[in-house]
Length: 348
Image (cartoon, rainbow, N blue to C red; front, side, top):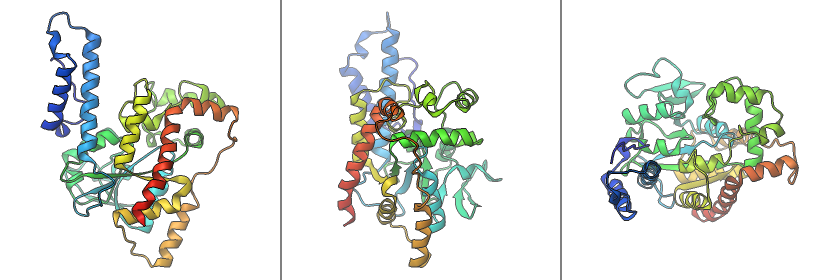
């Protein structure tokens, strides 16, 4: 078949995943159509199918199951960034209270950002590695330099879950953890951030029109106008969790996303952030160099900054608009709260 496009890095296309894809293609009868009179819609379907199957294989093979204990020296913690779900608080807590080495946006700063080897960056009172995995180019650089198997980093942060899977492998898997925030107030936090923050590099692009058009239009909108516009990022969590950024989402996508969450995610909630942080620390075996009293005070500093701002009440017009636009994400958030309770048994 011509024009085989693999939408994840070649390093992650294992023989086992390719053989699975080929068997499914054969069963689907795509190989039986011959080379004459090719239906281009079918060809595009094959490309999408191949991408989906390889991406699913990367998640399955390169990220460890949450039910399995974290193995220091083999596994690496991976924090999935959900925009405006208090990822900055997570970063600060890991830096100031636990003094861990992280791979974040800070890795793109400083003179070693383009070096051909992994190095530590000491900046803003913390330790970072000179890789920025919050964008796809940085992830590619991390793959080339062997970030996931290096042992130099404690936590890798990124929104790009599937692309970041290529940093790991079966022998050195990533272990996913994240903080979920209710999609409606999270949408308001995103809107406020965009309106008042000039550093637009903080966000993965939500819209194909580009940063200037996207942010420039929002600058002139009220929150209600934004929530009704086509600039509003519908079901961001579902799309980025599945790597289906442009697909028409169905309940099958929701079911697939839930299964990934159940099997691969250590769940945290922003409205239960104190307990969430304790679970993260326990699961990954992190230890603070501070005294017990200092650690508690340090953690309290970050807990008090958790996002709570929301101007509307439930069942308001704006609330209902966002609930409808984010229907799939609402389902995932509800499931995350269920998993949070189920995972309590892991910490008894």
